[in-house]
Amino acid sequence: MRLLAITPIVVDDAELARRQARYDELAPDGVRVDLEHLGEGPRALETAADVRASEAALLERYRAADPAGWDGYLPDCVLDPLSGADHDLPRPVFGIGRLAAGFVAGQGARLGAVARNAAIAAELDRRLASYDVATVAPTAVLDLSVEDIADDATWAVAAARAVEGLDCDYVLNACSAVEVAEQATAPYLLDPTAAALALLAHRGAVTGVRA
Image (cartoon, rainbow, N blue to C red):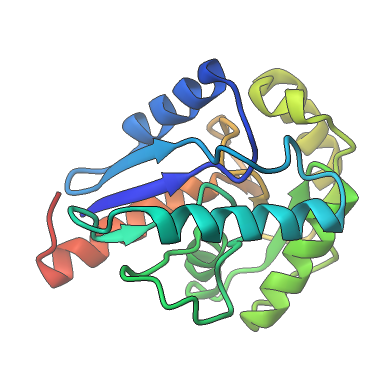
């Protein structure tokens, strides 16, 4: 299965390469993800207007993409910016957030979530509600900058503080591009990208679609 991912914000070449390396490392056998730059659009998701602008820019980029050679589209964003509407795209659109949340819901496990800022938290709560996925509490806000996405240590400390006392089994980390360290006890901070790619690999095995 070959997937076209596009960043939800404008990033520089170094950040694009870092994100691509994550996909290369996380993608199981049978799944290949090629990440491309958004081009025009917001440089960070700081407000609800930024979220909507990102969605519009992603849709424009996917509509302009040549569908030949792709088995599906995977927006590089846990907010699943192209979910919930029929955009008449020539390839199926897979949502990282929906797949990761479904992994938890399918186990009957309890889900919490953390997000970088209030705008992302609000959009994630809205999206999860549209999937009929319940969380134990509204998404916790980490109050981090867009630069902190690439700062694993800073993100890990903020997330650990935010999940203290949360009575759940998994915590959805509302960023597709953050490294999540291995953990020994619940609640487990869930890497949504790793979960989504693992489920897509299973889909490929069942349907016979291979990279």
